[in-house]
Structure formats: structure tokens, C-alpha cells
Length: 326
Image (cartoon, rainbow, N blue to C red; front, side, top):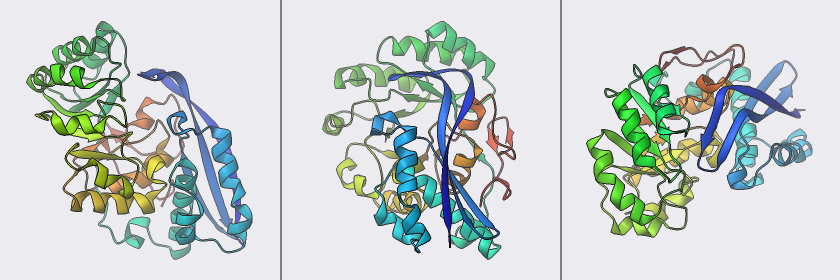
């Protein structure tokens, strides 16, 4: 019989992290653990207030399934037992981890994937004053890909400052729904001239139809407007990429399905994350193998990660050790 536990854990950040919706100095995650005799599977999720999630509500969602799991609910059944979101992500990844340990085979092999290789991640610069972001960019100017969090006010000044401090780095700009159509239309030409490679979620979810009428000289990526494979039909003609995050899809199972559906529909793939530990990045690493943009820098923003952790060599992430997950 499989037993289930869930724990709320807090990890301090290296520095305050700010996006258009607020700031934080620590990240709070929920870890699900499945135990079946000698076998143990773990999965981590990052509850997000944007989706009406709290650590407590997610923990309670997970624990509510303890009787069903003890009674035989498996990973396949989980997909309909919980809606997409953080709680299902933690459980789905815990099931994958336990299945791999039972089989004595890595998750990538069980999922029919290729042997994972290192990936290059973006490194995120928290939203701040242009001068502060320029300093952060200078400190990370050797990184090939920087992601800038924007706020909707003075954003061109922020990008100009970062570009001047890290002229060799490609840039992703992430407005987190803070722009309107006019702001987008007046910004994109200069952003293209500064080497911006991707614009992430410029408009609020629900205003996506405006993008169908606007030029997209820089590819535009759906984040808040994209959850899982079911989101894709509404994004055609409005976005060029989708940002797959396991906390949105509800786990690795649905993330792999979403990636395949997105490619079939002609979208490029970005794989992202909430701010979390290496345990949360490990399953996302498998989806990232076929992504054009990878943003799995959560552990790089932490003052303390798990042990063992994913090894980072600059912006290159090494494949996760199986002693961590999978």
C-alpha cells in the first residue's frame, strides 16, 4: 500500500525577486512524498497566487488524495483526479520518481525519451530600477541568455540599460501581463534592435485577441495565457511560442503531452519554472531537451538548494543526478 505525505518548505533567495505583481525574499514550495515499502518518490511544486493557490491549499489538495492513493490510484488516474496545477504536478512527479525506482530505470527511459544532455538556461534579472538592472546585467554579462522582468513603466529604459551592460547576451523580456496593446506596439521595434529574442506574455490573459492584429517582429510567447494542451487552439495566430511550466500543466505527464501538441500546432517551445529547487527542475529538464528556450534558473536564484542538486556550470545545467529525482 502506498502512503502519502506533503510538506511545506521555505528556501531563502539570494536577493529580493520582483516581477510586475510583487516581490519576495524567499520561495515557498510543497513537496509530496510517496512511499511503498523500500521505494520512495518525491515531487515538488510551487503554489502561485496568480492561479489562486497557496501552500496550504495545495498541501490540502495533495493530502485529500491519500485514501485514493492507498486504494490504488496511480499516475494515469491522477490526471483526472486533479485539475492541472501545482498539486497535481507534485504528485505526478512523485509517481514518476517512484516508478523509476521500482523499475531500476531512469524516468527518461520509461517515458521513451532520449538520454538527457546539458541545457543552457536563461538567467533572470529581477525587475528594478534601470541602474540596478544594469549592474545585475554587468555581473552576469558572460551569460548567453538573460531574461528581464518588466513592470509596464520605464521598461525601455530597463532594457536599454541591460543591453548596454551585457551587449553580447541575447535577451528575453517578460512583462507578466503588464503591457497594453499600445505599449507593445511602441516598444517592439526598439526591442528588436537591441537583440531581444523573445517577448513573454506582454498583454493580460484575455486581451490575447489584440496580438492577432499587431506585428510580431520578435516572437511572442504565451505564459499566463497557456496552461496545457487544451489552451493551444485559442493561441493560434496570436502567439509564436508557449511557455511550458509543470506547475501549470500539472506535472511531467501533461507537460510532455503539451509539448507534442504545441509542436504539432506550429508553436515553438519554451520551458520555464516557478522559483523552486533542483527537485522541481529535474522533471522539467526532460521537457527542456527539445525546447528552443530554457528558463530553469530557479535554483540559481536560491541562497540554499537541495542536496544533491543539479550542477550548474555558468548557465549550463547538467543532467539531474538520479539520487535527486528520476
